[in-house]
Amino acid sequence: MDYALIRPIFGGRLRQSQVDGIGALLAVTEGLPRPWRAYLLATPVVETDLTMQPITEYGRCSYFNKYEPGTPIGKRLGNTRPGDGYLFRGRGYVQITGRGNYLRAGRFLGLDLIAEPDLALDPVLAGRILVQGCVDGWFTGKRLSDYLDRPQPDYHNARRIVNGLDRAAEIARCARLFEAALR
Image (cartoon, rainbow, N blue to C red; front, side):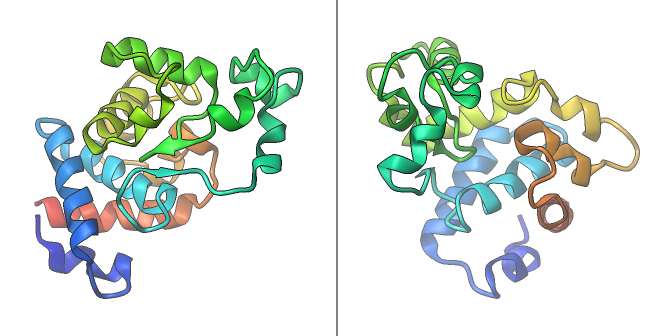
């Protein structure tokens, strides 16, 4: 990895914690095609607010009421009990959200993320969730192969794998820099 090529993403400087997070992601993505790795490194730039460390979704407790059972979002996320909105708020490199996603990720990892949702903050586990979720389409039904298995990877539309087109241009720019740095 040529870190000089990705420094512009981080304002010209990388903190050790960012380098450590990038290292964890490089390890968990080893062996994947370069465009996939580039996207999987670029997405956490936005999702972790440039920290490159697994984080907990920002917001006051009341912010997460939109994820409560009975709300359209809460229903879609599989939240079934009062308090699920806050308990299963976003965590990790990609902010998995909702009881259903924690259950699926926990089954994949062989861990009880329902009982211990903060396990999704462990860098290795968060990396595995990011990778498998994007490979298998856990988050939106879209997969890495839908956008990146082509001569010119479509990093802009690949954002649909995680979160519609929210900040897609920024992630695409970062992915192109990561791809160059991985060469």
